[in-house]
Structures are given as structure tokens and as C-alpha cells.
Length: 109
Image (tube, rainbow, N blue to C red):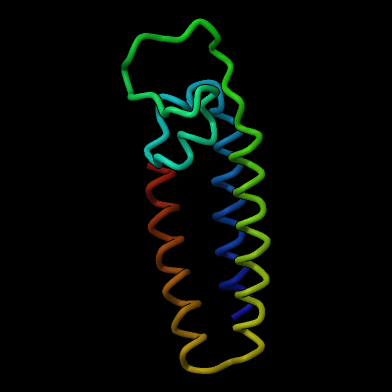
């Protein structure tokens, strides 16, 4: 079970890596509206293919901070569920692993 928790965390780390790697175009590519608000300077997410703004730099520090805090919280909760080792907690871990697998396929393709 700890391997599955490690897999879930590694997919989150890969997502954070892609956030930093593509930070210059993230305001155009981001599909999550909450993340769009976190990276936009005027607190209004931009729509794709709109006119470029004068400052091409986008500040992704708040988004990366929220993703890292979410990763730490999720890893702690998942480790607690592994130690609890009930049918319910194992079902939640497997469901999270499935969701993270789908996210990984979405990020890679």
C-alpha cells in the first residue's frame, strides 16, 4: 500500500514540475479556474487565445505553494489511512490511485 501512496505523491510532484516548467504560458493553458485566479495578477483568469498581455511573466508561486501544501496534507492523510488498514481506507486509497493515474495520462498526452 505504501507504494500506491508513493505513486500518488509522485504524480503530484510531476504536476508541480509541469507547473513550473510551463509557467510562462500557464495562464493560457490552465483549465482550472481556481488555479487561474491564483496565477493571474489581476485576479481574473484569462481565456485562451486572447490578446497577449504586456508582461508575459506569470507568477506561479502561490499556485505551487498551494499544490505543495495539498501534497503534504494528502500524503499525511493517506499514510494515516495505510496505518488504519480498514476496507474503507483501502478503497479511498485505490480510488485516489485511479484518479491520479487518469491525471498522469492527461498530463502526458
